[in-house]
Image (cartoon, rainbow, N blue to C red; front, top):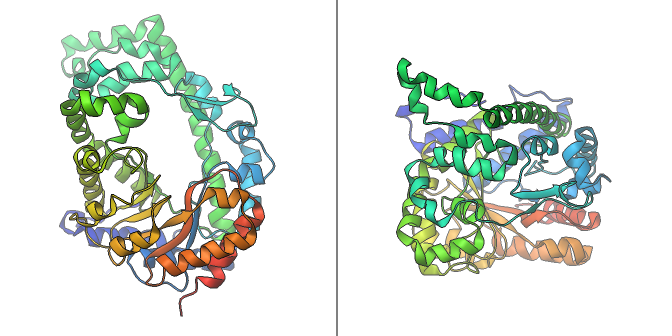
Length: 449
């Protein structure tokens, strides 16, 4: 865990960022199995820190973002990843040993038994709606109704607790009975808080919460063991320490959903803007708390609904960017580094982003379908960036095509430093030889003279 010094409030955002980076890059408080692992860790963290600082490291860092590939490469099914943590740990060890990646980036697995305990409805996963050999899938519904904007704006956490959670966690329906917690502030009102706790639906919800908590704890220990395999055994640092979302993506993703949010852009403009603004402090708090707990300053933010293909530039400027920029500035103020995973194309967004008052050297952007020559033109010397290796090339290309693509990408986007060679998508399916070609090309061709 990162510990803030006593003079934290007196420090600038840049000074806070440097303190967080120094804690992350330090090897003094970390355990390594061999001196080689410690040295590998030191080189990898300094390399990425240099990129964030817009410097040229010894070579281009390499950071694909991984999903289901690790389990598949280890010979286990998505079901085993979610229910048999020991199998995943073995698969993760094999992946780290064979590829020696620079960073542990989004190599996460989800706790199936925890989802079972609350009967999660917003996703289907192996043994719950999809085959054991298939990854999880989102179930698109309106989990927040159009008529509930005002309620959500007035009390976001209260709405999530009493309305959203009972809808997406079937065994938590009893939470609908939870009264206002302000009944706790006077003795005479306290029975109003606890009487509903005795109702059978609430008792069932509390039991489900306890079981989910137990399963989440077991999963957290397994997650820590997997991370320690990468860091302690091989010297592979974690490069994602926290998580947050662009405020627009809260309603756009799992509250209203894709179809409904498109309608809301026309029918509920005032309320949508109010909600996005209301959720800025939540986005900041989520990112800062999680990055502080992990002692890794990078806050992963998947950008879902802001792409060129999804909304117009005018709507991006009006609905998406103002609250997202406010969240970025709030995260930066606390010294954490937004790790923006830019899905789709952002070719018509780059000038908007660059012309903002976001400080130079305070963010990282990894791109999917965006033209990397344009990225370098607009963001070069101002923000670190990377990505763009397509998942289709990893899955269906040849090793020569992969080598050629990576060389061209390094030449286009990376000659001045501040660049990371990585994927534009989460890697679920890939040929192992193509992934090796990506790493090999970056390590040989991406060396700075």
